[in-house]
Image 1 (cartoon, helix red, strand yellow):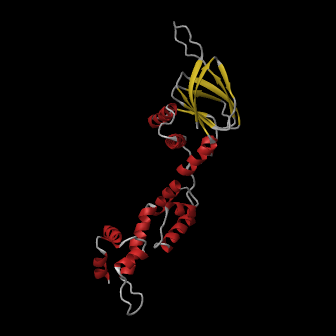
Image 2 (cartoon, one colour):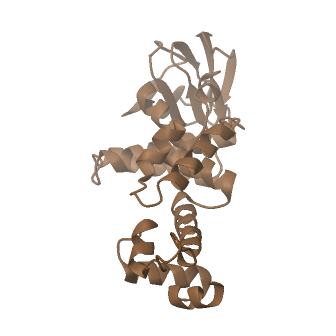
Image 3 (cartoon, rainbow, N blue to C red):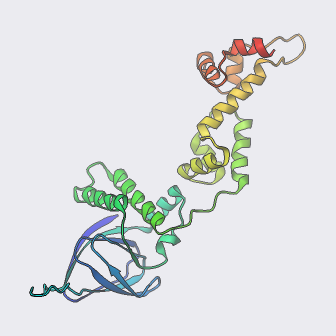
Length: 275
C-alpha cells in the first residue's frame, strides 16, 4: 500500500502501466484521460473529487484543458492527484474478507463520482498515510479495504456467490457432533473453506444466527434432552455438572446462566417440569 501526490503540469502526461491497482482522488481541476492496454476504456473525464480507478497493466495519457473564463487569462494546464497504489495481495485479501469479486474492480479504467462516505474514506486514508500510519499498518489496511469495498458497492459489483449449502451443512454437522469440545471460529471457517469474516456472514444468512449463537442454542437444546434422559434402567439421572460438561460448558454455574437465559428456567426447574 503506497501513497503519492501527483502534480501534473502541461497539456499531456503519460503514465506507465503498473502491476497494482491504482485509485486516484482528483484534488485539482477536471481533466480527461486516454488509456490503452488490457482494461482500457477510451477517454474518461475525471472531475474534481472524482475517484479514478485504473486496473493493472493499463497505460494512461492525461490530457488537461483549463476552464476558460471570459476576461481572465487562461491558467497553465495542470492536474493534482492523490494516488493510492493497492497491491494485488491486499486486493485479494479484501475481496476474500468482504465477499466481492476482484474482477469487478479490475475490469476497466473508469472515473466515479464519490458519495459522502466514499470521499470521507479516501480522505481518511490520505490523512492516515500522510501521518505515517500512526495507529499501525493494520489500521491503514482496514481503511484501504473499507475504501475498496465501498468502491465495489458503488460500481454495482455483484457479490461473491454464496457458499454451497453443503459447506454450511458440514459445519452444522460438525457442531452437533462435537458439542462437548471447544468449537473455534477459525476451525469452523476452515471446514467451510472461507475466511472467518466471510464465513460469519454466510453462516448468518443461511441459519439466521451467528456461529456463536448457533452453538449456544445447540448446546442448550442438547442439555434439555440430557436433563430428562436416563442412561439405562436403574442408573438414575445425570448430574447438572455431567450435563454441563457433556454439552461443552466449562462449569455448572456458566451452564445454569446460559440455560436460564435461553429457556427461562434453571436446569433443575426444567428437569422437574419435563421429566
